[in-house]
Image 1 (cartoon, rainbow, N blue to C red):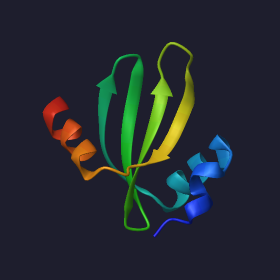
Image 2 (spheres, rainbow, N blue to C red; image 1 turned 135 degrees about the vertical axis):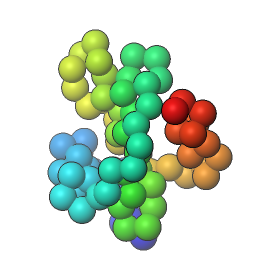
Image 3 (cartoon, helix red, strand yellow; image 1 turned 120 degrees about the vertical axis):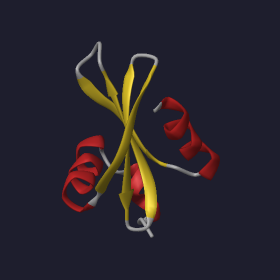
Image 4 (cartoon, rainbow, N blue to C red; image 1 turned 180 degrees about the horizontal axis):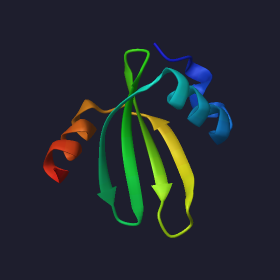
Length: 75
């Protein structure tokens, strides 16, 4: 389980945890974002990379399992 305070961490710390301890699963394009799905401590985490701004905009724990279906539909 991810620490409940994970969503409160600065984005650079969340990204570092994903890159060190997470496992990349899938990616999709969503509007202006490249969204990457990771597995981290038995939970799913999404990283939103803004193509137009060339930076990570958001990293969040997936709360709704239905959200994962978007990755199947996108590919």
